[in-house]
Amino acid sequence: MKEEIYEAQAEYFKALSHPTRIKIVEYLRKRERCVCEIFPYLGEEQSNISRHLAALKRAGILSSRKKGVSVFYKIQDENVFKILDLVLSSVKKMARERAALLG
Image (tube, rainbow, N blue to C red; front, top):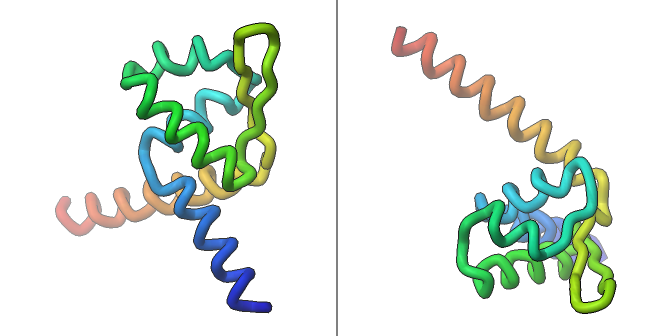
């Protein structure tokens, strides 16, 4: 049972383990967005972005809905922002510590 929990946790982190995926999550932080807004914002190939959106959706981080021919994505798990904010805080702290050592 515990092994399954560890696997699920690892899958969640794996879904966040690419800079493009983090950009997508951050772009969706304030509101739901049409996929037609996400592609131009990120400036990457549509097929590449689609794969990233699918990975985030499989992990339960995003959800989507169709309206006519448009697909809208939103954050399904608001806890993702707590995780990203904690990681950002740690990264900033490490950068300050490195700068202090070099300075």
